[in-house]
Length: 275
Image (cartoon, rainbow, N blue to C red; front, side, top):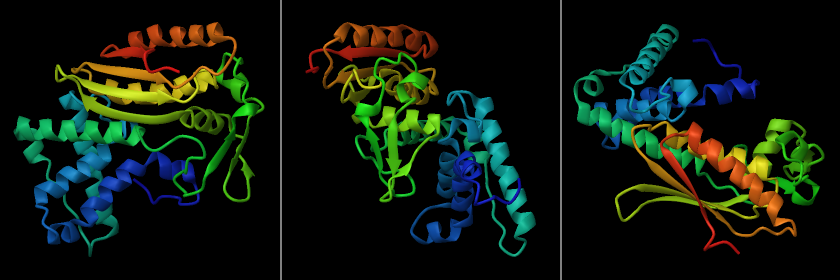
């Protein structure tokens, strides 16, 4: 534990869920004033912490050892904070979640909901980023036939903010090109009580590799509940290119490896809703 360098965005990003959990504990009194119990506050802090797999150590939501790692980290946060703020101490009680399987189960379910909700944030054309600025992707500048992320975004014209600052980092270009091709996603319960996650892709022929990488983020969150099975339905609003075969093959080559890697997920391409 160390003071955060607020000028280093990567450090802020890498530790964002841990800091979210910490400040729930710091704001305990305010939360109790509006009706939450101490246990509620501890639970909310855990959920804020655990919504990130890497930051919390909860890779598999159904793995008790992973949760023990998360609780250990929460305890370490308390020690570090109290060392630095002896006049404003905080606390965390892990005992209810370690001794009551129903309470731990509730923590697991709500954390999964947070993870799926987080990855399902608003996207689409000219989406806003965390800073509140809009990012514009000139989709005509993407190399749709690149057949790799690097090639697809090599000459991409992507700008951010009112001044049109250039986005030139390859990873950033990949994220914006892929996420802005997803125009809707939502999760619902099927007739057999299965959980279904539906993703609508605007154009299956626009930067398919970047779009597939964005979808991988959704699959990864669902894979963190490995004892459950999920269906992911991908709806293509259109394939707006004359060469449908190239893009159809690209998407078919994505499906089988994805299901092999994320063994609790079935990927379904919804042709009936395709234009």
